[in-house]
Length: 228
Length: 408
Image (cartoon, rainbow over all chains, first blue to last red; front, side, top):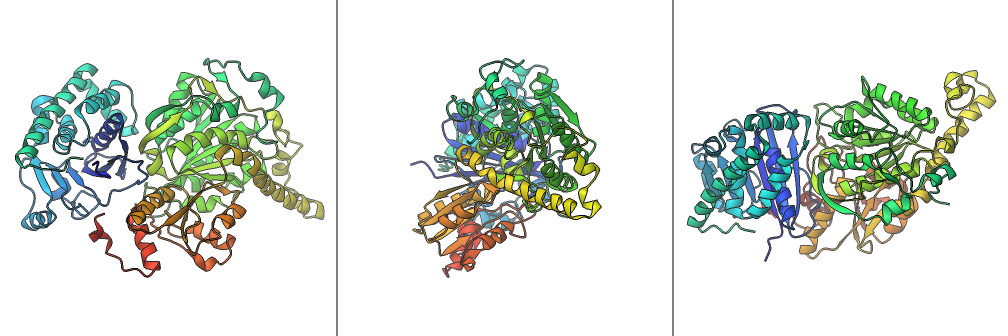
């Protein structure tokens, strides 16, 4: 049976592509024939300031909007979300549901004993991986860290299909798109970096696929059943 | 007759504008033309509505992050879909420029939000008194200090008394349809008033959702300025004459009466908009299960959060009805009295600190002890469905689990 709703909270910093990630995931769910909504939450649009984005996916029409208070999945895009409390909830995992999933982009373990105990009491699975290193390795830029995060969440949860992610990426980067003034500028910066749009699409997808494979293997080894 | 076109407008139907769009009968465009699904942000939806609205002038104060609508509509101007596109040096200037363009006989559109709306406030009653059918999108955000760019509907409270038509959209779909329909209602000779079309900022403008769009090659017929009930830009006739030589300053019976009766007339024009609005947006309110003893009455995103709360309570065997208020001005007195006649408890969730909708309802409904003003959140806080459920359970005297422990 389809789970009623998958609520995903993405916490990161301005410039990391948190808003884009939620848009891509929601677009993919839409292409899979599911209902989805994505919306962002941020203050002044500036680099390194806290930025959150929420993606809701389900089998029935979704009305719920705004900040996601009770997520099934939390994705931490930057260590400072945890170390400098750059999130809109304290602690950053507040509200996470039982049997939930926490994905952290970091090259080291950032959780203290209290965090671990709390997450364990709720049976929350924690996947820590260095998404930025993966992005550097495959796409040659840390700007693709958000793609690694998308790959990880899809790999573990299978909340959308990879075909749909591919289509969503094509739609998002294949045509001119404005999410906000700041995002448009960033998109242009990224486009220059990759020189060609096709290359951008290809490298983004390659990063997502690699991260998807690693995360799938991790979930399988843990026999995780967070799939929707 | 509701929503009639003038002879000039009728003669335009079937012809094409310079972008190759066919001027289409509004009723055909709204209810019969084929629709295609798009997965867009609310800001993109605003752009798509304007593409089809045959707008003569858009004036922008491109504040970000109110919404990207003003910037996106600038692209439409570059593509040739809009007659003229101006930027004002402040929100106050923008609303003055809108008035100038509308006095000159143009179909005018602008967007605003929060502090900018407050700054421009002086212009809105002036638009009304001058009978200018300008459409203004209000993508609500916080106006108080400390600042917030997230939705808070307090500026709507200040707009309630301006005399403008005021509709409150719940979703991007409402927005798309009501923008196009709004021009038709606003421009009727017996209405001819500005429309404040409001939504809860980020929750609509920055949210990606599925929207059914009409064909891009069909557009509304042009605005016909000769349908205006007041003379265009004549310095010797009202309304311009009234601003040049305010009657009230002459302090005699005629000037006093003229001023007062004109205010009555603009309010009456707002009430007359009902017959045009109701067939287009499907009534001033929308109801679900209003035979239930418990009702949620709301407008905007609070309706959406109410829908989610109703689902949660259904799971627990509690039946709750819903009233969505679409139009705040004119206010749906009769419709609301009828819809709430069976209710024992009426909950009014709101995204502002004062609960102005509850206040309006308390003044409009009999036995107003039934009305519970809440829950509300303010300053851009989110309102999870669980908060509404908790408020209802608390009032019914049920034991409630703490919010954080619910983990629904």
